[in-house]
Length: 365
Image 1: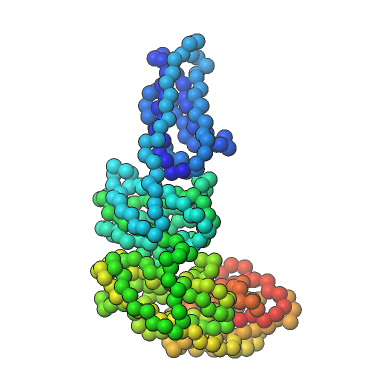
Image 2: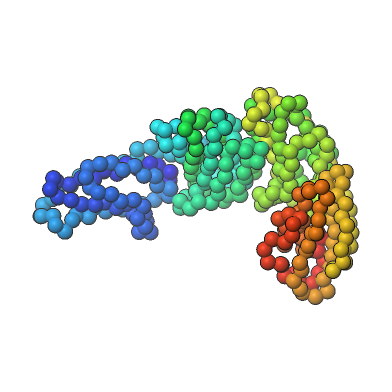
């Protein structure tokens, strides 16, 4: 998977033919004229392929032909948790392809370490069957994407968009690997981002019904962001790195990943500290259905408030936000009694999409 094939086919002068490359399912991946020229094409799945040469009906008998299919450029092997670098330019069509293997299922994080010149660089991850399963950008290192993947073989296609060469460095991190340190609650950790750009991952365990008080700081002049992911790799919350604490209510018990991402513009050896405290989440304030409520969001609670409502019968619920002062961005999430999200708004402007149908029960907002 990920190899670049060079297909060459030719026939005697005066004769004509065409070739086709088919995958194991019979799908045509590429085709061309058997005129002696070479066609380069990338294959995204490991396995058996068929190269079919079709002689033209107007040919006479005894037409000699030549055909060859060779690996012109194999996919580069990536070592998990180890950085790699390359240059994207016109000689490689601003493209690089890598292959890696996960021995066990895990959350994979693409960590950008260098993207020079302000160029835009995207990536696409494919499984062993060649199906695209994830994509994203390597530019916004502070929001490096993570993906929950089963064990298996994968390829990553890197595409650069620029008119000048792009120097690129990145690494694929296994967030579930043995090298991820455990972060104890109520304990401060001080460390250094050696390149200033990399992502540092911590694992922590917390209970539903608690609120994490996350405090992270970096050296003056540096920038970073953090994200908290649940055991399934879903985003729980995120923010830029302030020195003040940030409140994150939790709705499920289990293991979480806290990722601190250094900005690409940072210098090397950026110091940081992180501390996560566990607080009891206040009980939701009861919100009567069909009755308005004024919600005041304060900085002391990281501009968050929890309300609850109950339905005695199944019904369609239409949450409506009518206004937000000073033009701030406000959104809400409705959860079931187990804390699972069942609906989320796009903004305070109103509901996006069809109103959800809720069963009888209690719902924290």
